[in-house]
Amino acid sequence: MKYLFTLLFLLPLLCFSQESLEKQLDSISSPEDATAFLKENKPKQGKLFTFNKAKHKTRLANDLFSLSKGGTKVTRTDFKKTYYKVVDKAEVNYAKFNIIVINASKTSEEEAKLKRTKILDQYYEGYKFKDLAKHNSSGPTARMGGDTGWIKAGEMSTAFDEIAFGENHATDTIFLVDDVENKKYYLVIKTENKTPIEEITVLKFSENID
Image 1 (spheres, rainbow, N blue to C red):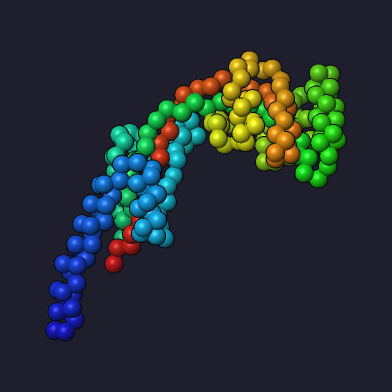
Image 2: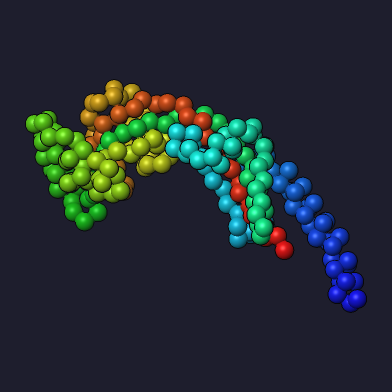
């Protein structure tokens, strides 16, 4: 009888808590609101995600792209309830590049530039850019032959953005980027022009079901 009374006492509180949570989620209308919600609640199972229509092809991503801004999807299992809320939706300019990165953090600027010049000469002699990237480039793109995939301004450094995104380079022509601040010297080929791609920012929040 004592346990039954305790359950009956807690049930309204649980219902109120659930309604309060859903009202909070309904009030979120921007990435800034979502960040504030996560900071305030400090959920262990909460996070902001960005989905790109060209990169993300899962069933979940397709369902979320079908929602308008502010739309919510809820999934349930026996133990968990997960909310997905689209807090931003826009078309963002992306482009593709092949890059060779010469890292000067362990050498001098002059040596890095000299190495880049030698690689450039090899390219003009007929060596394939992807082979030169695999053997000379630093960073994760080297194993892909220098291919960055679709990227947007802000994913690389400011120096890279100013030249690669800020100037009107023709596709398949090679150009240089000097990122002096980060001690990186690039050979770059733009392989795809700026293309608007739909992108959504999604708040994911899960709660356990008792």
